[in-house]
Amino acid sequence: MADNALFQFLLRMGDNTLVLGHRVSEWCGKAPVLEEDIALANTALDLIGQTQMWLGYAAELQGEAKTADDLAYLRDVWDFRNLLMLERPNLDFGHTMMRQYLFDAYHHLLLGKLAGSSDPRVAEIAAKSVKEAAYHLDRSGETVVALGDGTAESHRRMQDALDLLWPFAGEMFLADDVDDAMAAAGIAPELAALKAEWESSVRATLRDASLTVPDDDFAHKGGKTGRQHTEHLGHMLAQMQFLQRAYPGASW
Amino acid sequence: MARPDTATVWGWLDQVPDPEIPVISVVDLGIIRDVAWDDDTLEVAITPTYSGCPATSMINMDVETALRDHGVEKIRLRQQISPPWTTDWLSAKGRAKLEEYGIAPPNAAGGPEHCPQCGSKDVEKVSQFGSTPCKAHWRCLSCLEPFDYFKCI
Ligand SMILES: [Zn+2]
Image 1 (cartoon, rainbow over the protein chains, first blue to last red):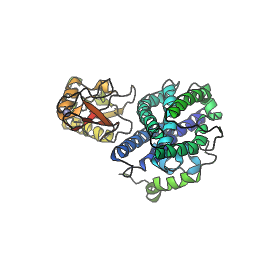
Image 2 (tube, rainbow over the protein chains, first blue to last red):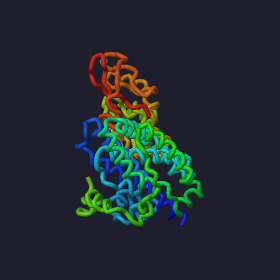
Image 3 (cartoon, rainbow over the protein chains, first blue to last red):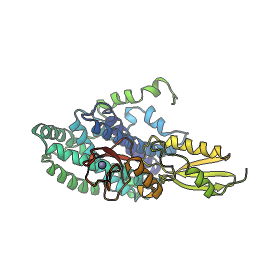
Image 4 (tube, helix red, strand yellow):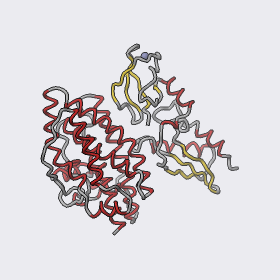
């Protein structure tokens, strides 16, 4: 059970970065301006690189000569363990950046704690990733403030994005048996403690962005447990996994 | 062949250019973390700059090719991610070469010290990201030239 909990935890970490990395990469070649296009592609690249480390470790635990690629390309929707928020379609640039910010603020905080994990592999992957996450957070935070506190049009779009995404943010902090086992083993932090820190920094940024945080604390769930993904993930996987499904074992 | 000492091997690796910024070597970049003999096998530890850096596999291939060209037969490349790569590991020679090439070297203050073309301190950020994961995009307000800045991490 302990090993299975660690495996599930690694899938959550790796699936979050994989699914968000793929979503962000969908902007490549069609972002609003060239600089944003490059920034998004670079962010996606970091996230996919982090995925290789998390899913690589998960595949080793799984044994059977499995690799990170097997996990990324050959699992179906119900085996994915990413947060629902990350599989949502990009919609507009504002929605993409709001989602990025809400996740970056959580990811950066979490990775910082994981760098002190009792599991040395988790600690070193986190220590590597947290530097990249800090850079992502800088940029997404600045962008949320610039657009939220920008024109009437950009403000409206950012408020709409926040209203849409806020009910998905709560899933990041919903602890279950896997999280409890990881916390008890000193592998990962208590999510409840993380939430307070996340909320205070996110609320301050959203205030600077002159945006209003919705009152309702309702949280959609089912992504990180794999119990119920949205209809969007299957469509995304159909595109992402097409090559390996159509031509099994194909390599560059 | 006789086993060359590790200082000689470091010298060879210092001739292997970084595929994305060929004016500096993989040693200048600080990504070669260790060179050691394990019996008759030469083991080289390499760390990635950014976790998703697409040049990583190219660098591994270039390192292996260079060592083979020098007659080393048994080579083992080991990826090492801890401690994570930092721009503090760029060599002084590498920093000077970057600047000469037109890329502002990393600076703890978080931005370039001056324009690598004309030396002006009147510079501004265009974007936090640039043509490769390790660079950001800046411009000079004196000579009006855009330039790459090697991000400090
Ligand atoms: Zn200049």
